[in-house]
Image (cartoon, rainbow, N blue to C red; front, side, top):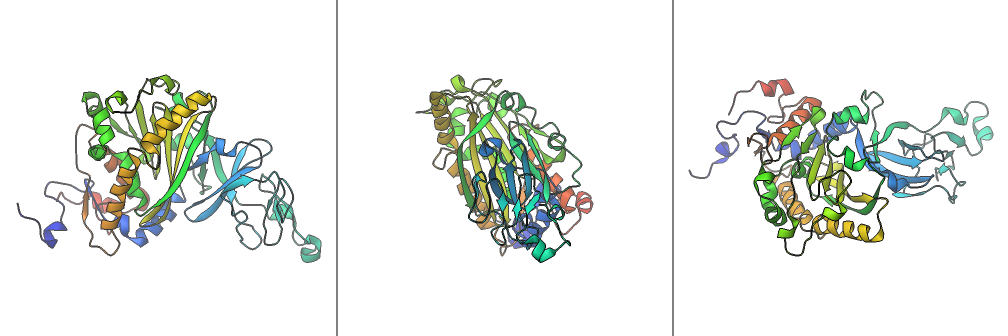
Amino acid sequence: MPARNLEQWSQAPAGLKPGEYVDSRIYSDHGIFEEELQKIWKRTWVPVCHESELAKPYDFRTLTIAREPVIVVRGNDNRVRAFLNVCPHRGNMIERRPAGSFAAGSPSGNPRRMTCMFHAWQFDMKGNCVFISRQEEGYQDRLCPKDVGLRRLRCEVYFGGFVWVCLDDKMNKSVAEWAAGCLDCLKPALDEEPLEVFHYHKAIIPCNYKLWHDTNCEFYHDYLHYHNRITGFNDAYFGRKNSGYDNGHITVGSFEVQYDKYEGFESRANVSFPNLPPNHWYMIDMFPGANFNLRGSALRCDLMTPLAAGKVLIEFRGLGLKSDSPETRKARIEHHNTIWGPFGRNLHEDLLAVSAQGAAMDSRADSRNILHGRHEDETIHDENGMRHFYDEWGRWMDRSPSNPDLRYREGHNQPAA
């Protein structure tokens, strides 16, 4: 059949129905992106870091969720809390460093206090305002510190010590309820004993955040990965199940990776995570954009911060057991980095793919249909995980992923192409 003209190119292939393809505008349209921040990212649980990165009282990390500046701190009661990183006085960002400790004093304030450098207002690790400079002179008896605490946020430490934050006070689910069972496949391995981050790097990728999430939701693209083709691609690999859970989450079933078939690699069996069969590999993708990926000896976590329709910040973490000996930790780091390090076997291939997608889906380009129509009995190359994710996206956005000009229900009622 000859190549298609523009009119033919703009139509979904005959036989595919809404839900089996999406409109590329959901990746490139700036208005849709802004709507996502408000309707999805400000209303869902988002994992932001690991508790081992807040190892001591007064340790902190800063980040953003849907453009809201957030600070996560460990108090002297050892509890992890989250607040908007915004002074209630004049709206200044209190802390600009990405991470550090409040145990020592700052040029503007006392030890064990979060201090706004603008006017030296100070806050404790529970978010209480404990000092207003020249309070009586300026406010007399009209304002006192208890009236101007920080904006506290929903915060939980859950699932192997990850720190979760939700901006919406009306979220009616705990993290466990929000996960809807999708984390259960890895909880025995991650909750057995404390974990620790041993690898961290971040990158700004020129693509929509959903395109990066897609690379973790489907394994049909393992044809891209030479390492995966060599160490997998057997009956057990192709028989793995993609399973969808409430709230848009997905898990990918396990099989035994044949590392010894790749020259220079070795078995991970001696340093597998607790309660995990040797050399097995599980993956969890959580809506709207977090990935937990356990390959035997090392846990990989991708956490994302959408920056624009065509730009996303990814924080890549590798984790092992806090109790690791130096020799075991060295092995975990090597195993992690040869797959997922900046120069590892797989990561750069995924980055090349999504960057090319991002370039082809520029906001100024013609819209087109992106196909999610493979059906293989919900096994590894089925695209049911993609369909599950985008159906949830449509519910939150009240837009049809196949035609974002239509509301969600209207799109469901459209006939097959």
